[in-house]
Length: 575
Ligand code: WT7
Image 1 (cartoon, rainbow, N blue to C red):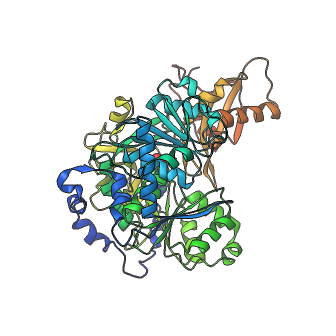
Image 2: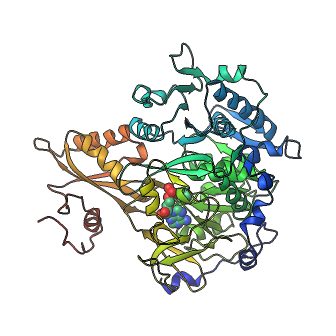
Image 3: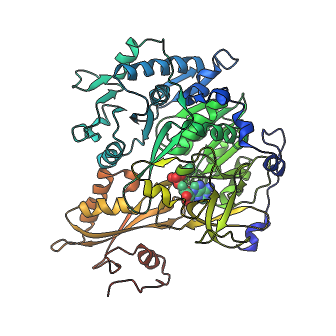
């Protein structure tokens, strides 16, 4: 809200973008015009995998590279035609196992071509795909497979020990990628089944409102929520990838997100392939040298990443950038957390490009508020609503607030890629729509007098660490499973690189002493039981944690302690 934040404007550079100037695009837009471009507009029968892959067969894109993949040991490429054949075959593998339309098939493996083939094949039989981030440990895997009653999982021998097959009665099939030796009952080898599978395949045509993908995400209370998206989402995946990512036929596009998170599917699979673009997938861990050399090696033109990654690259220094030829880059985008103005200025200095922030959520399925290549940028702002989207700042009753007033960031309901369900939890779903006609995001923001939106924070206690959303409740639940921990309260602590880090306040049970060894053991306990990114980086021991009279840990008080701020209204706190 500070006037200085608004003062600097980065103008549009160059021309020839897919999207017209913002006002023109916004004022002349209708989703129906987008829909009409799909062949299924008349029939209503559709399949995302057909539109993303099969549709390009018989066109100039047929033998174009759809996927470049490399990691420390592999270096491969796949054309659209090859991906069609492979995913058809995988569809036949699933059909042979008896997987049917609407059933849930989970994919739990590192980012490799097999992951992408499995996702596409699952969608081709009309099943709902559930991608799981490879860092998840047993507890996190169990919660998701149990809640969704998944019938099959595609995984690797290394990750299999984290899948508690015997405790999951609905789970009938384990498809192992890279298995050697004898398999157990209920297990099949991906390679063997693919070798035997026919290329002759009939895709399952579904309704546009049929389930496509289930992404689990964290809230501030309860277990992770299964956010269901439907095939209809493709309308928005297609149009946003075209206008926001500005994808054209000769682009080499690199989305750095893992398909375990929504960015890695909406914009790592669907958006780019619906537009016939070439996807780059780089396996392995982050390092500045590896990332820059990936851009250089593939001559990446469009690059979609996250603030934490940009901040780490920035921290690695300008000298590293200069060792690589990054002149292929023409468009850079960011998502997941607030993009600091410093990072945008750094981008203009080292890449000579603006970094375009985009705002959306797992629940929204696709980008909603963005900086467009055809629009001036105000560094620090998330940008303006995509055409067809009405965004506003509303108070807690749903009344729209005037410019420069902070409130709930809300979206008028009814965009094509909106989630359709929280799996098994209609009450949680309804909560998002409690203010009549609005989807309530859980973010607070304000809109300036020019219609640019500025992120302020989460309204709830959800933690965003290194671009990953972590629910404090999940971490607290895991912490109190440790025999030494009596109570736990978890907050996000501001961090210059990761946005926030996870900080846990705990009290110990009688007989335990707060030694460094014990605290490290507790940290490892969460890491092994939940996921590495969910383990608290800091643990502080207190005699007692602040609680409400009904026994709820008051995270807001913990946060105030941490930041040295006033604790506010304590009227609900016990003694
Ligand atoms: C939350 C959603 C779908 C993208 C990956 C994260 C935060 C997202 C921005 C941004 C500031 C952002 C919000 C949002 N967030 N983009 N450009 N600026 N904050 O998806 O895990 O569902 O998390 O990420 O707090 O509510 P997610």
